[in-house]
Length: 185
Image 1: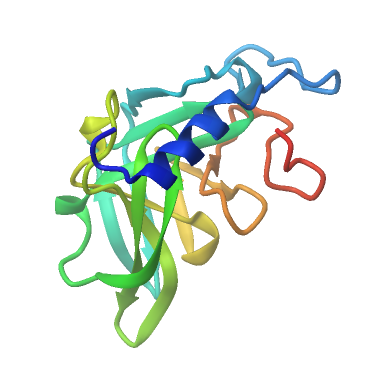
Image 2: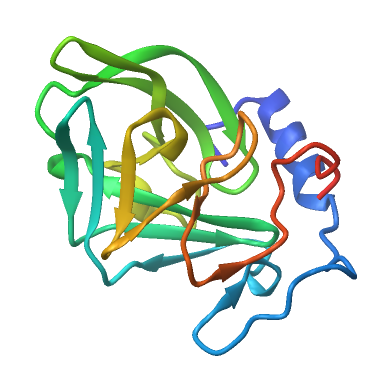
């Protein structure tokens, strides 16, 4: 964790220690479905294997066949797109940062398209912690801050709440964190 300062290391240690138990009301996945409660902690990084597209202000601002996703207990998967597959000049650095106990320090971006701006709609990790180094050169996008996101042909539903950036796909069952009352998950 050399990229983190002492306070960030303390925060990481705390959040990694918070248990995540499967709630009694968790949905049971059917054939072809996955449950967010079967995702691991620490999270798993994997290749998506489907096309991923982001639309904003009447444009396709990102499209790739090389997306990665993070699957973590209690949260819809977060999709990371290679920056090279985001339209040139769409990502504009935004102020502020956040800290993930697994991936490290994140920085944020606005998404500009034409005369429209999606405020702090994307984030990425310049120096992701091990074993998530593959996220370098990728950005995740808040589905609720752009017009539409797709995984394959499926339109994504944004994860509830202002903080998390998971993408809810039709094959996913929950409940997932983000709604009021789920902060302890």
